[in-house]
Image (cartoon, rainbow, N blue to C red; front, side):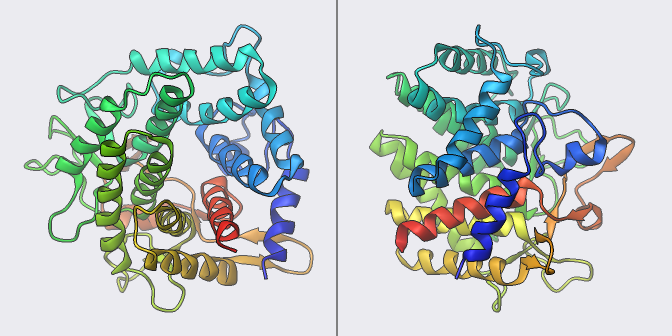
Length: 374
């Protein structure tokens, strides 16, 4: 049933090189050279997950070659700007742990320590949340939980520290401020100062429920539920995931199981069923069910979304395969002269592309969950 998806993944890997991947549409569009970045990081995690599950050395080998390409012998990372304090830059570090286990190369351990040191210097809000980036002063974005916390948990577990208190504290802060009581959904961003033009002056939150932001948070929770071996912390994370997935399920498209770019406004003009966030929710549901932190019914809900994506968004025109319906990017605050104000109109205005890892990687991760249940 999924033969075309297998061929699609194989083709992407075959056409990529460590310094130039075919799934990073932001770099391709900007004409930039390859770099250490979260987009490739998402794909490496997905390839390593599927590779370890299926025994496909092509996936594992490629991911290791990418990591080896950027990590120098002293553990420093080519193209990484540690003084920028971008949580996004931490995400690719997840690939260091399987690479270290498989090869024993000390440079991977040193690189992980470098990223942990970077997190130790990350600016925080007075409550203790990481700023998303140094340019986003006192701002917490849902994206940042995925970019930093699974890496941090892996490091704590891998090297026997196992102190997950800061991780759960930051998740609690997100829940406290960014969860909407009426819908159970989470807002994209939160400004501690409540002064940004996109922030509500009372709550500090942005105004819309952007699907991929919720997706990032969802897969962070699912991954943390697997990584963390402190049962009370794991239980609390599972409860937060259950609450969110129960809320999300109400907004699934009845036919495809997919979700809308602005989650709660499915019938509004311009809104569309978006692939990356839908894949993330599918993965979180299926993984949560496998781990036992979600009821078994969520496995079927996630599977329906996954099958809807494969059926409607994975295309083959006789020559090229592609995954369509992926929002290229969205954020809050000015970017290249564009005021990203967090309105409905803003979120539906961002480019929709195909073959970007922000959509491919969670689809591959979802595929791994489907295979585990097969």
